[in-house]
Amino acid sequence: MGAKHSLLLVAVVLSVLGAITALVRFQGFAQERRDDPFSRLPSHVAHVDHSRFFAGLEFVDGPAVTRACLECHAEQGEEFLHTAHWQWHGTPAQVPGHDQPVAIGKKNLLNNFCISVESNWPKCTTCHAGYDWHDQNFDFDDPTHIDCLVCHDQSGGYRKGRAGNPPADVDLLAAAKSVGLPERTNCGYCHFNGGGGDAVKHGDLDQTMFFPSEEIDVHMGRLDFSCVECHHAENHKIPGRSMSVSVDDVAGIGCTDCHVEAPHENERLNAHVAAVACQTCHIPEFAVREATKMHWDWSEAGQDLPITDHHVYMKIKGRFRYERNVVPEYYWYNGLANRYLKGDKIDPEGVTALNSPRGDIADPTAKIWPFKVHRGNQIYDKKYKYFLVPNTVGPGGYWTEFDWDRACRQAEPITGLKYSGEYGFARTEMYWPQSHMVATKEEALQCADCHGEHGRMDWAALGYPGDPRDRGGRRQLDLLHSEGGEAQ
Image (cartoon, rainbow, N blue to C red):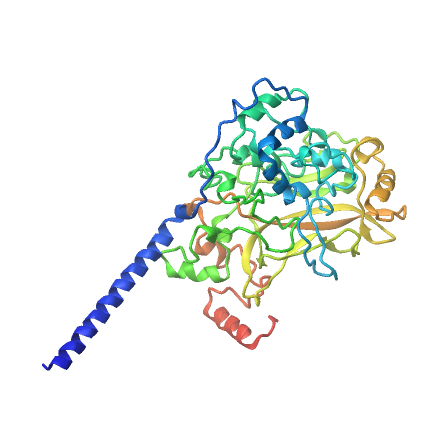
């Protein structure tokens, strides 16, 4: 063999060895990425013990605590003034059906639970991260009214009351001395009780999540995660989007922040991730231990019925239906949403979606997601054909007088919605994507849960010509996509 051939052989051998080495390294990296999501969890600033910082001080109210906090944390106070947790609305976003971007949030939206914050502030702002929000004149530029304790108290004795103020029996000094990194108890104080009580709103958030078993949530149970492991704040802006108040996907979080896109050993399972959200398989049911509210009918409020179960009926709110271990409904979702805004016209004979996921089978950015869908029946104006905001809280409010006409007249100058004097009730629905109460992998959905005669998916409603498991269904779907047509 000549020298030239020997050199060529050596070059080939080195190339093969290099390729093998690169492949091994790549596989090792891929395996590391697959097996070590913990490496991508955030690091937290070391906690400073505050127990000695308030010696000799007495706090007469919440703002007094905040003024003490701001002596060292003025920059953090300024940061918080620009957050959604403080403003209760986000940056202006384009809402489908509206010409100009709108800044929307809890502050100015309607829902089909307690309906609206407007005219009902003292009750609703119990969960605002501030103090003294009694009416429309609240000063959002005053940092002394930030409630630092609701997120940072670790004494276990802090709580909030009317207009966000702590009741007189709360030991504010003990709370101030205890402050630390937010825990599940801090976040859950409001988020687990959204809608006026435990388990009302979200479906995947309730008080069982304070100290859950792994059967309720594998991340918070088995791994003892706090909320801020996933919702890790920067400059006090906490990432994560609630479709109930957001229409865009800015500052969202997702499973792939820690997990890889194709995390399974089985490639057939990995092939699903292009069209199926992680949550769809890994959250087989929501409201795992505590029943969640699924239906709220305001039209039946005001009656003196012999029903003592507040999960069935309350005179001030009407009739409810709660369910436990609920199988989600499944819809395409691309991270964006539609939203009903105050004053939008409705068809009172139909069902109005106050929010709904955007995306469909032809959208390459959409995936099949699990949803809680809360359905309601709420007050609207028969002449103007839009939903009304009744005043429920306080003197003259519906919860005091049980008079819908008076409640709507009281709210009219505050909401800006003209009230004709004629009201009725119309059906609504709200969509809540599920991302918590993640099951253990042993309890994740299996093939037969979705495919086959008894599968939980409505393939036709999702736009498929048949069960994608069937070879014929796949061929039809490929043809549908290649022609850019619509399912018939």
